[in-house]
Length: 221
Image 1 (cartoon, rainbow, N blue to C red):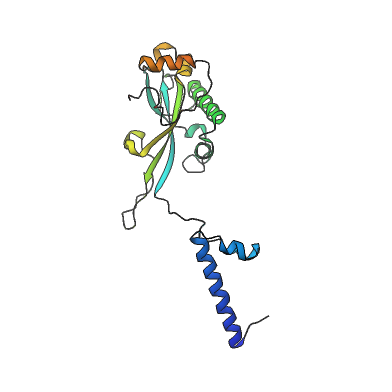
Image 2 (image 1 turned 90 degrees about the horizontal axis):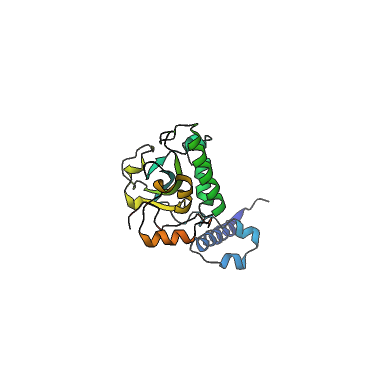
């Protein structure tokens, strides 16, 4: 049916105004359209709040390995162990971190996989193959996006040491008790006596997820 004439144009203007009003109400968070309109009509108005906040930073996930002989953390390049799309956000390591970084069993499996893979010496991952690792810690880099008008630079992978501390957020590390079992006492982190006693109490506890409130082993408080 073709709408024509003055009444037709008026109807289209009213319909357009109602549609724009519905989009605006949805964008500001009002649920009025959902209450008064059929679900099908309301569906086509739910477009303004799909992306209510612009991203202000790019997030990149990284890993480090605890080198038993040296007693320190070194960056572990995970890309050889997740070869599909190794340099972009679709890499399986990036996807696991995004969706499962707080899922204990997944992080334990990732921990074991990276430790075993490095110690097998099959790939160059930034840590010499003859330097066994006893555990990992994983973190996210919160890299600010350029502001409008700033010069643009093609993204490139830089070493972790290049990034300031305020851009790094830790969310998992292998428990000290597990580091001791894998590395032996000489390769375990040195902490104050109170922390050692606390770890000893949980020596057989397999809960390996620690968050930022509990600093990773080897960091001074």
